Length: 264
Image (cartoon, rainbow, N blue to C red):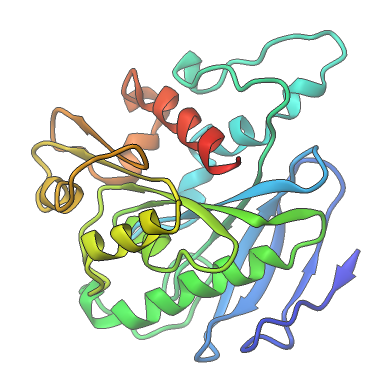
């Protein structure tokens, strides 16, 4: 199926869905016309929530493929006639309940991976506004994919992606999980989270204790029923938390709890 979604700034974007569980390339545009490339990994359930994964500066969406996080969230194993349970990340990710299945959308921020060219810089501050536009475009295009629940877009991001999933959480976004936020997008993390909580949206923040400024960013507001903070020892940052052999013991359980709450 090919269709033309119509976010205000991307009238020519197209998405072609492939059968089955494997990712399909999605090309779309940010508000300023920057071409972006993402991939959509479908759920086996109709009208399923969609998780938008946003990577850190200097990485790319390919990093998610090196983790087991995408197939774990899709949970296609629930359809196995044998009832066999599948193990992900060497058993470090908990069993996904059989009734749960999420679509997954990944993207490359401009200047990363397949979303090139863009002005080269080693300083994320120089592209803060542009990265935020890319994040908004990712949420917008994910809402238009056929068969998804456009009112349950769930953001999970690392580092600049951790800032972006919160700052761009608007229409249709039902929650955000930040891993190692850094306030590099020049949007105050604490104030943004307060606004999301006021709308009843769950937010989670996770950091390593020796990885400043992430601890200070996560603790810029007091945890409550909708806002939970998770701390782990060491200096891990961002997508390192998703490397299977480095996953913390409680990481998967925390992530699953969030997905369940955000999909309600």
